[in-house]
Image 1 (cartoon, one colour):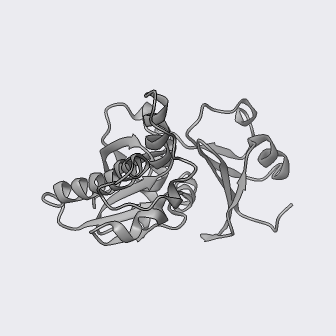
Image 2: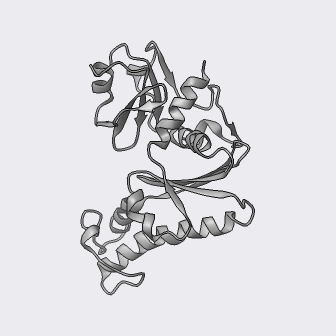
Length: 238
């Protein structure tokens, strides 16, 4: 058992599970797991605040001192979303975390994981909607999967160097995936900046560091933004 914590923040993603202990708003180092059962066994009896992009694990049902993030629980932001039951818990948590960090800004949260999500939370704390598109590796693997002759470069793309125009097929695949994401993000920023003049960009997610230096607008690389949101939501239940 780890040192005593106030609550364990559990972020269940598509490819891994991340846990972070919180004590009075101070966060411990994040740990990565592959099985939720291992987390529940290691932190038996510990209060938990859980965000999951997967279907609810049966082991969580009825567990004491456990709060599952969904649109149904009290939230410190307002969801202007027509199908809140389909809104990913990680997107809600990140939006709350952004509002905690920058309460006087319109915040654009760009989460670069398995899928890329771009969500807008205005300065009044209203979640205005967003965009979901394929993440970096998903773009690379899908082009190979749905064609007969294009290779899958998802495991070797770091060794492929290319500008925006590739000179080989692998370079073209890299360019379409990598630079396509950059132009997509910059296009969204340019469009939204016309109506939201205090727009603050927050870049987060496992692939965020690959893109930060190539984006035109000022970007704050959010560290533990989902955890900040989860902790705020957990406290809000009180």
